[in-house]
Image (cartoon, rainbow over all chains, first blue to last red; front, side, top):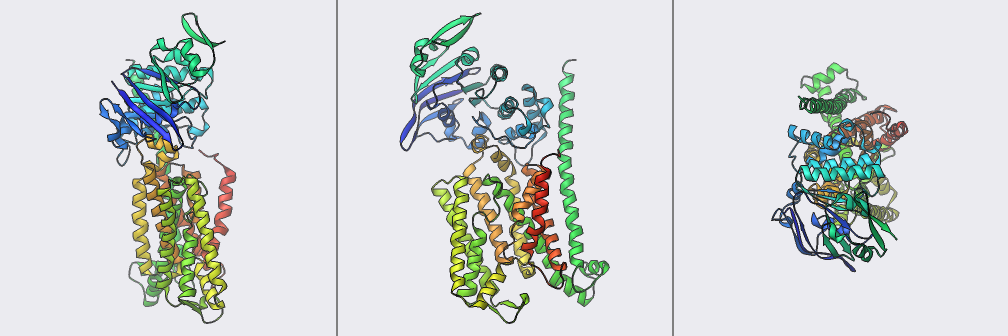
Length: 250
Length: 361
């Protein structure tokens, strides 16, 4: 078990955002978190790595209580990609090397440079190393921040809508990369998504959030038209085209 | 066989990266060289005409009595004050711009300069620490410079303290801190105006002259204190350079990389304000260096704080040293206020860099 979340809840002063969140995932799992805007998907991700402080509940990373680890130790275990990223004027290599921040004492070691290099390679960015981040396309920038998260050598990846602002080609590329990394490096990924078809195609676990609570969670079997309709208030049909399940609003 | 390729590739890329960072180190070395040249020129320039040989002899402790006094008691402290204060203000601006995520931030964004000026006015006017004995710039006397300096420093730190405490306990965003700084600045300006309104002409003149930045106020005592504080701050900022880089990528990303964002920000702003408070209290208000020094270097050397922090410090030294030398020599024997010169020459230089944009890689 890489990640296990128990009884997580977070409120803003006037309203509760998520409550009673409980789930766990293992090595090699690609968990898609689905739900309407405002259902609490991003809040849930931020509570897992303590960017937001949950009011109750515990998170275990490989059996260790996450909230008892220091920020630095947590950063060695969890890589996070925010929904919006600053497009700063830094080289791609430097941006990825920043993922080694939790490990660097005074200066980046040769090992740090090599790990950054490997992360670039696994996302096909080797040739971009000395390009400036703010001169890249949205899809390329998204790959760079994922490479940075991988350079942290995490057990768990948290990705907040990594595909939402991308075109079809880049959506597929990024989703494929996440799946590949998760399987190859035997880590786990928790990914918030809006595109149900993309989720069904690449994720192997699903968590449907409704009004801050888990509506349904499990494998592909929870992705039923009934569940989807209850969560999104849109009636849908699920068909198969060449053996791939496809969600169609009706 | 197939494994060979990535290994070659990796070393190539790392080599390319080393080459890329080496360029930045060259820029830093050049700035360093520039300071040495500018210093020699600055020590050489002045109304007592000494040639370069006499200057070097005096520095090495081998000069005549006159050259010893001129160099050791007057010019050297002034030049060192310019180098140290310039470095301090510029590096403080660099950290402020990062911590507040605002390119307009400068060392006095939290209202430090106005608070210090208020403190100086209180000392000069309310406690009668200043007077004037004849016409002209040199005529203004600060009877009790220690009282003025202490009062300026105390008020500057009090202003910073209020903002940092508010920020800590009401969890202010960077924007709120900038706004709080604006509010506090105008509060202290208003206080200064009120005090000056009820003061005698002589006192107002002394107070106004105090606010003009003047490096001539620095004696060895001030130089040592400035050097200690700026040196300590520089080391502190260098220890935090990776954290500042992470902050550039956004607050959430920085947190996910293990950065204690609030603590880093509090520490950075406190130290940057401390440098400013000490510098303003000793030397008066020297504007623009803290804004433009780091901004110039951002355009030349990039946003990586590993290089940006030392480069900003050196650029600040060069700017202030050159400005002060110009201030002393342009219409000699009149010494112009250095604060005006820094803006007068810094602003066009900065506009030029802005217009040129990011074309250079």
